[in-house]
Amino acid sequence: NAGVTQTPKFQVLKTGQSMTLQCAQDMNHNSMYWYRQDPGMGLRLIYYSASEGTTDKGEVPNGYNVSRLNKREFSLRLESAAPSQTSVYFCASSPGTGTGELFFGEGSRLTVL
Amino acid sequence: GNSVTQMEGPVTLSEEAFLTINCTYTATGYPSLFWYVQYPGEGLQLLLKATKADDKGSNKGFEATYRKETTSFHLEKGSVQVSDSAVYFCALSLPGNTPLVFGKGTRLSVIA
Image (cartoon, rainbow over all chains, first blue to last red; front, side, top):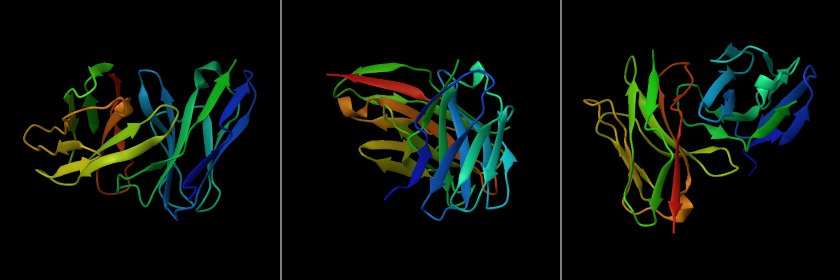
């Protein structure tokens, strides 16, 4: 009963390096999301995909790109990492964007030096 | 715009104390309201929800009532336990293709 699986769980990068965070869900959900969580800032939406084949910007999209590879998978890419992107990243999925019931992965802790 | 405001933490309580975490919202339209909980080292999980005015959501001893007249959805528990130590997020959802809107979270620490 995997739910939402994120990889990697931990990553350390140097400024300017690139990386991709992977996310997969096995619940046949239509919508998927990427959030970042920073102390005192709560959760901020980076990008979301309401359905397969669509992606939309959230509150803090700058410096990130996403790909909805298929219904199961939604990846987040940092092309040129910056220290300001040090954060914990969460992937989530839901049956649809208006339902409100999100299922979250365990998070990926990224440090950019 | 649509937003959620929660009381700032951290909140520290002794075991068996009464808990209230305040949440108010601003929304265009008629939102559904949610409380999510994040235990240490984990992702968020849904705790309870209410989809219309005067509905009460409840789970694991926690309750919250959707008050349209005060635009509030306060979380309460009569007797907290150490295992309730977590971060609690209030959130709203509107119909259509708009993502969930979260508050900033309230950290609760319960001490024995």
